[in-house]
Image (cartoon, rainbow over all chains, first blue to last red; front, side):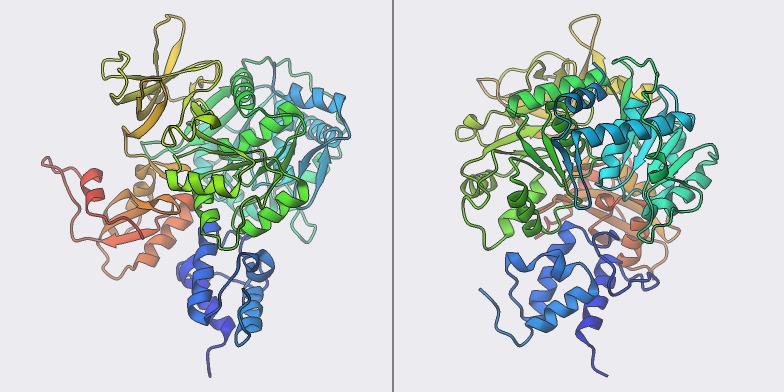
Length: 88
Length: 515
């Protein structure tokens, strides 16, 4: 079975923000900020991951909670962008 | 004057004006005054008395703002605690200050319950906000119920030399120290700062910094003092979203730390003048690199930029008048109004211009000392020229130019500044040493373009199966977020001095700056 976008994002978040703690019950829709999973420098790391891993160029206006504040939102954002031309 | 009088006075003059804006609630001065009065009455009914210590363990939410002023109205002393504090440190603070009460949020109740058990303090009054499902956690009184109390003024008989707040700061011994500030201290500091920032009642100040960090806390205290509006946000994680708030609310004042400036400068699509409502930006915690200052001035051409320097023990020491920025971009300026700042040599004599020495601060903003820690107090507060007063030895090395403008040179001790907050390496090392798989560890700061300094741990393992992630996870369970190491390096031995003592200085020299 191929690894889905959501699996990749989850693996990245667990590895980098939960430091490999797979016992943490991270719901797909849980806010990463409200639950203190990522902070401001974490968002920068997340953006670098999305750009490197999926070849997406994120404009400032893309880096907002609506796109990045839960596993589900991040995955939906990437799915919408993969294959679509990057906006300037 | 006691500080809550500013809120009461402004509520009397401008009850309908907006005092506080958060994502969930806007409060007018009248509402803010009323809610704080209700909570103060509830605290008094719960047995909180004059000079009792009450912890505010919350993130940046309207309830935290209400709690702080309610505690003052109850005649008590507030202590704001960073929301990422873990149970063992919270337990230490509960015991150290003999807290009478703690006001918190549902999501933090597991930490409070664990800390309460560790501290053995079963008398603590605990009030918590409701969870998203509307339930108040077991073992806590409902915050909403407290707000249903009638706002009868509490006859506490407190005066302005009573303690208003206790701010815990990372201690070089590995244990936090409570900085004692009276109402008069806060009055003096906020008067001085609002004077040089030229704050006006029509200012709208945005704060994304934690209220547990004195720079964040003072944004609220100053806004209420001058009758202005505070827009309170939880973090700067999404700068674009914060800029939208600045536009929506017409924000005029925007306090920064260097990490935020570095994040702004990494953004790609910003146009000069994109936030025209801003009148001023301020920076403190560490000096901005001159190229960052230049770029900020390009992006915010209509705003004054203040470079400042301070420490919790006196709130703020110096500021650079914005008109001096072109001539001396590397300076953090001169003493704030109605205070003195000067450089002394090892004998305590004033150092001439160009000669580095320790910065000493004198004025009505200087703390009363550390809570029940005379030894640490005596190191920081020492006799001055006048027999009746003590002056503050900052532990920071500075030098002055010929015209008296001050330049930061370095720390006298090992304190690391990361994301604008101070971290004592010892506090992190204590947590590392508590791990059974770690034989030895030393913690140093490594220069980092965004964080200022990143926390790095050099570790000798006794359990070779441990990974860097295991160690970071262990630290994350016991330390506030900003204290958790970003870098872990494994060594077979740690650098030591000739006498065999682990040397942080030698350890730092073995580290490369982060990219």
